[in-house]
Length: 179
Image (cartoon, rainbow, N blue to C red; front, side, top):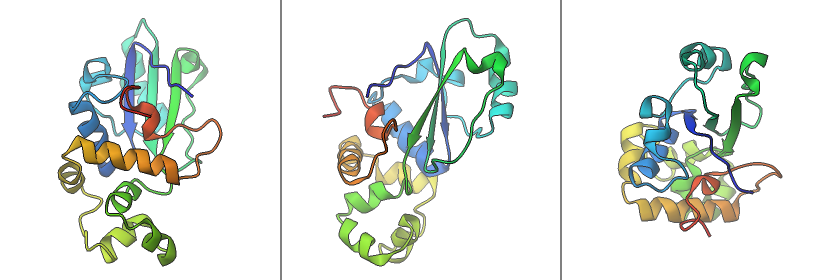
């Protein structure tokens, strides 16, 4: 399932770890969109649809806008008002159960994680001794090599149970990078 991107992109990340990953991919030109297409040329942290409309959509964009939301929850709503619903394509990129799965996969600890019964972030903190696993600086540095990040994203897509009609980080990668 291919993601179609509008002329403008609003990339909204749930947390700082997600932001660090998206920024690493952007900085290495690995995504299906570039920073220059992005509103304010930066990752946004505005999770509420009404606030997003007020802050960003009232600027009067003439062309199509894609709102790409990077989040781990399938239940989180982002309902735009009728005035904007037809102009904006909302694309949810799900990282369930948590973005920290990329680190677990990269560390080759998936089997141990599954046996533990812990949340991915708790497993990283307790078992992998990565106390700062949710911090922007840690994740940005940990995935500083884009090849390691790409490899983890690909393995994650193979291991995770992706629901029909759902997008993952793999779908955001340029086609020559994704399998």
